[in-house]
Amino acid sequence: MDSIFLGRPYRPRPEIVTPDMEILEDIVRIIYPEYEKGKEELLKMVREELTKKKGVKKASCFYGLRMVLKVEDLKAGYGGSEVLHGVSIEVREDEVVSIIGPNGAGKTTLLLTIAGLVRPTSGRITYMREEVTSLPVHERVRRGLVLCPERRRLFPEMTVGENVMAGAYLRNDKDGIRRDLEKVFEIFPFIKERWRQMAGTLSGGEQQMVAIARALMSRPRLLMLDEPSVGLAPVMKVTVFEKVKEIREREGIPVLVVEQDAYLAMSVSDRTYVIESGSVVMEGRSAELMANDDVKSRYLGV
Ligand SMILES: Nc1ncnc2c1ncn2[C@@H]1O[C@H](COP(=O)(O)OP(=O)(O)O)[C@@H](O)[C@H]1O
Ligand SMILES: [Mg+2]
Image 1 (tube, rainbow, N blue to C red):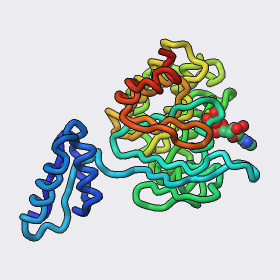
Image 2 (cartoon, protein in one colour):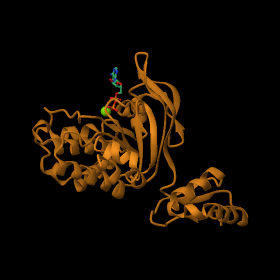
Image 3 (tube, helix red, strand yellow):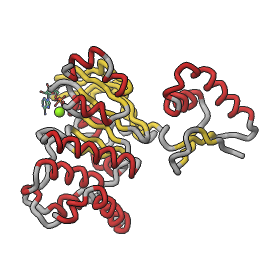
Image 4 (cartoon, protein in one colour):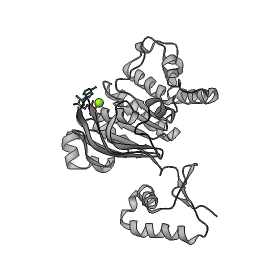
């Protein structure tokens, strides 16, 4: 036996990792979030298990543990004025992570920097174990690091279909594109029905969903969404976020979402970062943050 399977076997895609301490910590942290008290014990157990089995060079743990995005001490801004003053965040496989914070805090700047549209002055961005800090945008998109920008930015004079297909412009795997389009139709059935309609004539919520569909057509391995619910009616906001959850659940695509509606963001995400004036001021499991008095009074209005 050259591998040990750890974790809940609910994902069919095992991921090979080396059995070093950092990963053991991750395993404990991610698989057993409820196991806080027995953490040391659990760690010891896993370590023993790994060393006991002779010939184990690699431990394999389930999809859901691997780091997808790691942003370290990121500083960035516009024309000499610094907006992000050393931001660090992480997203792992299988997570929906939200970023909340007041207007002007630097949330959009953070996503733009991760996407490669704003150049950082210092810090490091690692995506899928590869440093991408200074890769051009299209190279990031090609690797599946995809941003669905604020205010949707559809081409209003083009059809729904043309907008959706624009997401696949860097791809030439016809079969893959067709399969992904079928998935898009399953998640957003209205898109198939409105394929030839001008995008500008859709409702705000529909346009947002087309923008997400377009992002899906570029085959993201991390989907970043900037304020997907802005300007939408409350019911439509919920619908959009249900789709976000569906994308994570059906396609296993992790999502990093910036959202003004803090309640909505924390309700659908696993973890949340609170950004104020270009710095992360709080972070944690969303459910725990929602119960935090500070967060409640400042962001949830209760
Ligand atoms: N293109 C730009 N040029 C100069 N300053 C900008 C630009 N975009 C944003 N800013 C400034 O950066 C700060 C953070 O903005 P932004 O990242 O959009 O915040 P958020 O998305 O949290 O509302 C703000 O002070 C804003 O005025
Ligand atoms: Mg913004």
